[in-house]
Amino acid sequence: MIARPNSTDVGALHIRKASIVDLGAIERNISAVCEEGMYLVPSRFVMPERWRKILVAGGELGNDLIAVAEVDDRVVGHGRMFTTSGTSAHVADLGMALIIEYRNRGIGTQMITYLLDWTRCKGLHKITLGVFASNRQAIHVYEKFGFTVEGVLKEQHRIAGKYVDEILMARFL
Image (cartoon, rainbow, N blue to C red; front, side, top):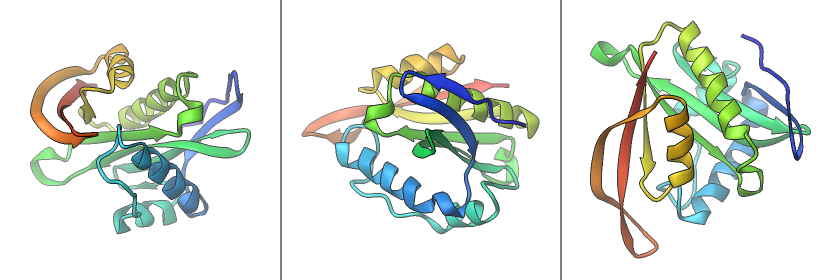
């Protein structure tokens, strides 16, 4: 699969498999999104060992993928597909984040397209994700790609003093 270079209103966009050289940028970007306190659960991101192994392997290891979005050679976001084993080995869980100044420019849409293409190539059957109910923009993008609500975890998170539901979405390939 070849990444499609695209143009955004901020520069040339390239989505590709991540590598170990992207580790610092991914950590910084996810930590920046975490610090916003609205879209990700932790207040600070620490790279898990699983992620490091995938990055060392060139962004893909088995049925796991980490990809990055670059604009003018700057990593501005990432997307990932992680699978489990056993009876759910056919399911990939999608996660992604973009730093604030690069949102609403079509980069998330291109990232999801890349991740879905990769997932199809791997022969996986289902993609799942969790998103805060307050993140209406992300929900809209996921719905554009055919994701539907499978469940809601009521008041699962407390953000800025308010309880927020987590919406569980899925899409079949």
